[in-house]
Image (tube, rainbow, N blue to C red; front, side):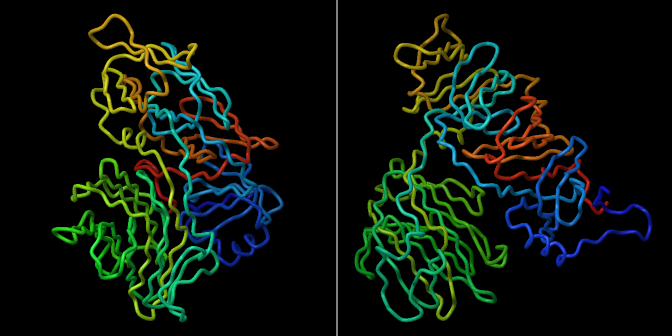
Length: 460
């Protein structure tokens, strides 16, 4: 018998899923796919069999001998727990008009469209009207330091129980303490970590980076991020003139952080003194260092200022990166009537991208300016970003359907899907723009339901 989990429409009838039952199922299926309901509390586990066009998930679960059929309006996210396969980083990324991101290798482009090769999806042909942008020469961020290596290389200012220590993959302190180490920050880097603090307590933590690691009371050039009861602030300390200047302030109170945790990502480019701040994956803004010369220090410092309060720093990483494609993609695309090209040297051209094809020296783009008859040939390796012209028909695809899902997969890929089904070790995916696609199951990471104004909540 097929069990349909839905809100009963008849008066007085209601099906209740208790957390206890769901936790029992979860314990029995540690290696199964995990379905998190819209409440964020209830979970189902099993093997996802399909997502139908009508917005129903079919799940093989130990709760029932027959597949369970779950209304999409009750499902928030599906996480796949098969053994994940790590893909080689793709050198290019293609963005579609609906926001999808496809990591790939560019094969060629003509008036008919773009052909790409994807490790996860194979060879794909994308119609030109579905193209939004391309990022070329994407490089994999190189991990320079990861806190999973433990406390090796760190210097701690004390040896009592309050000092910074490493425990279960997390750096933590239970009092006032300082920990320092040299990282060797490059010109462009990403600093990532997650802050955590004890229940019924306020965080008081500071993270100094690009720090020359001088004596505590000595003025120097460095950055400082502090998170306290008043919010999060990024400051610039200078060795001369005004000592401290606020670079960014976010009115994010600790009480607003779910689970007493806050994920922080800082993207620093010391070549042009820019800083991008992301909190819980959301961009808070891009800022400019107000001091003319950026700090050149190589040190990282953690300061716990709360006496007797446990504070944690987990997932701490420093990565060397190339922010050029990321920076160019965030810029204004210019006019929508023509194609726009940005080189890695910051040159900006407008016109028509006629073709991408192979040559004796590698792939080249043939770009025609609006006032020129002949095309200019540009090596693919010299190009950072291409924005494609937006036709009236392409805008129709940017609207979300009532029931749709976003699939995340290996290689940082993201795509909307309307349905999917599983056959052996593969997923057959129906994409709203590209049609039927196939992907190996172990490339899948998660599926999240898109909530739009047209989608009614499950309680209605």
